[in-house]
Length: 92
Image (tube, rainbow, N blue to C red):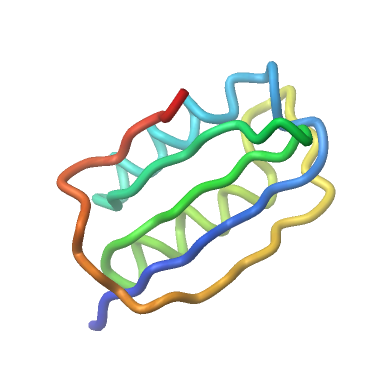
């Protein structure tokens, strides 16, 4: 298996619904590293790295998010894997 890095921009009702914390839990369960943060325009942004399947699991989860979220769109940008993260963090 290979490693990958994705940069996500998630649109919808994704702030104020514990999206970032739930993504952190999902990423940790899938051994993925990176970060997630809220953007001023109401979207959530995340960078996720790890094994192909692990990253794919987090990306798949992000299309639904936690129970109170309503995801309208997930923009996915594939990037070069860098291995720069030791863990997954919520940025503020």
